[in-house]
Image (cartoon, rainbow, N blue to C red):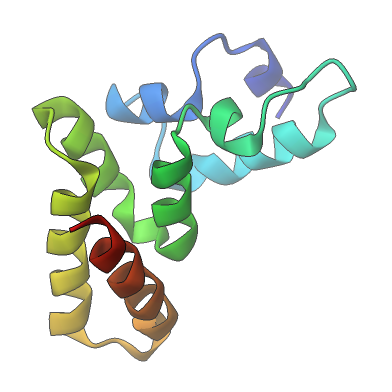
Length: 111
């Protein structure tokens, strides 16, 4: 975790560049929680996410590739999240019910 404090790039940039895995985001979250009083950024900012990206990630951790793809392709996040949501709905895994609910409402408010 101490390496994260010294890392100049936020998680999302490192993830986009395939320098960290999706699972390593927990180390960044822990580093943010352990940061001293000089850290004034929100967790979303610390991770390198917009508030919308953070909301989507909180609803479905599986959405990280969609978030990165939206940035890479310059497409609206809602378009890629709608695709992610459709895949979650198609798979219908019980563990994804909450994500499906939250993301359905999130997408509906943006389309």
